Length: 271
Ligand SMILES: [Ca+2]
Image (spheres, helix red, strand yellow):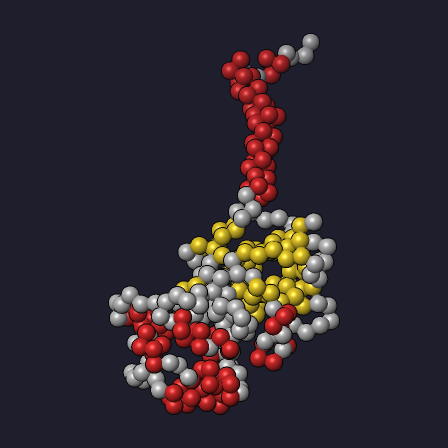
């Protein structure tokens, strides 16, 4: 007669230990796997928002039809590589802050002063707020889209075989082609590749643009005592010279070059 199951083990205790181990493998491992899958599904599908906060990118989940793209503030346009379809709805959310003039930020920090530092959301700098508002207002003509606030996030859909926004003169597509995006927007009926940009000012060779830059009212200069060239309040002549220098050096993105930070855009498409 063969040995009984009990006899295979030294005693009852070792038999029980074997049974418990078997139970763990048969029930415990699948149960833990199932719970982990549930948690993962919850994280990925049910909490889908993504947020840029304090310099950290928080991913709460991803969906197949979502593009998550950083938009650097020192680039006029960023290709999101996200394709829009005519029969799909598009929801865009943009979080984060950018600074439109790091030199002002550094100056305020160096001198321990509380000054306007130019941090803005994707809605851009409000036309009517802060001492710098009149400076920005003066120069709206230079914005990629003069009708939208400086610093605001804008969009462009590049249809197949057509020009992208960077292909236009001064990186400024026709105004009617530029989309207002801001912190949140819904779009539909568009087909093509989505570009997102920051509506800052371009240096553009032309007398009307030079005038927009150099003709700042005395009132506006009085509101901006920190706005100085070589330690002095800039005169019209000094501003014109500065403008000529930008043109001579081909420094057409001078106003983008002092921007810092980036936005985070999440683009969700649905039926
Ligand atoms: Ca700037």
